[in-house]
Image (cartoon, rainbow over all chains, first blue to last red; front, side, top):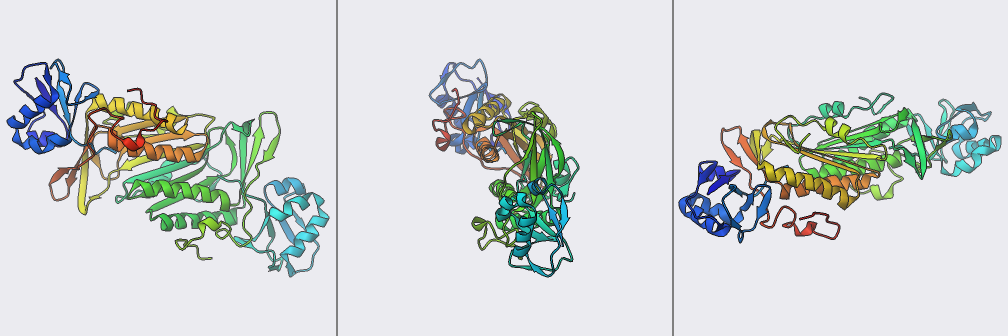
Amino acid sequence: MRIEFYGVLQEAAGREALELPIDAPSRVAHILEELGEQIPALQSHLPRIACAVGDEVIPRSEMVTGDAPLVLLPPVSGG
Amino acid sequence: MRIEFYGVLQEAAGREALELPIDAPSRVAHILEELGEQIPALQSHLPRIACAVGDEVIPRSEMVTGDAPLVLLPPVSGG
Amino acid sequence: MEHITDQVLDPEVLKRETENPTCGALVVFEGTVRNHHRGRQVQRMEYTAYKPLAERVLQELEEETKQRFGVVECRIVHRIGELAIGEASVVIVVRSAHRGDAFDAAEWAIDTLKQRVPIWKNDFYTDGTRAYQDGVPLSACGSGEHDSTASDSASSRGS
Amino acid sequence: MEHITDQVLDPEVLKRETENPTCGALVVFEGTVRNHHRGRQVQRMEYTAYKPLAERVLQELEEETKQRFGVVECRIVHRIGELAIGEASVVIVVRSAHRGDAFDAAEWAIDTLKQRVPIWKNDFYTDGTRAYQDGVPLSACGSGEHDSTASDSASSRGS
């Protein structure tokens, strides 16, 4: 499953995206757990991120299919 | 003494200015009284006008010399 | 740009005049001529001013706005003469470090301008008639003193 | 003009897009890049966005601002990419019949934008270092729901 990073998460992960070897469909919360184990530098960020697929923010209880990337959005600072 | 009108006062007085035959120095309140007698159409406006000489608004108790025109300013509506 | 002009107002000129690298917020207010007033159709508007006093009051209003709200820049220009529908009659530009101050300052500046500056609107209606809009009497005590809600210790007017 | 762009922002374009003869008030807010942040000297700024969501949220924010404050026009454009000191990162244009609504609407729009739109600032300091500014977590429930103070009966969001 493709995971995309934005903002400070790109720095923390050292990349803009990665393929996570995980069965789909899978619950967002589960994916984040796996991700935190693979990239420990992301751990401290995970409690405050939002997750999106396409133009929708989705709750962590949601199942995602992996057809589109799961996008991780850190706290926002626009304006 | 030269009197100048602005805004709706020009309409009411039917002119932009006039020479009032009055001795100087004279109190503003007295000048306005004379003016109201000369031009009755101004009467109803006089309670709500302000008076100025140059770039100063002056109270009705003030004596003016007539060296500069006495300027009559109706309620303002800029913006 | 002076404070009273018969030329078309250009906010970009005022923005360039006030450029400031310490500021994170810019608020521009423009009053524009509407096509209606109290249910009547307006065709155009004529503004007149008593310039000697209006120039001084606007200059003082810029300074007082800066002091009262702690904003870095404030410029105000009012147009006079004949204006078409949609044209700007007044432009206020405020710059500050933070946005809340800039909004508060710009709104106070236009509210106060409407009470203190010797300028008059003459509405020309589509039916061929015209009428001066009624307004706010200026204080006999001067431009700054008539507005009791505006007279607190933060006031910086000299008179 | 779209809602997210890497081009220099031009408020005059948004003003032309929103010209409206029924409006007497125009308020423009611009957020500009400051040369300092928490006591450190900033040299330039980089903004990034998650565009699919940011575009939708800004579009909805325009609509919600109009409905909530009864203003006639609201346009919001945010810039991304590298910005120099003094350049505008965001422009909000509001037009309304009366000025109070326009000020309130523009201020609410920028306050809410800062909480809802997936955009990030990266400060580049004069000492050669850089840092993402900390921000506001987006709600897991969607762009409109996390801000409890903004969720009253006047809200018009569809989601």
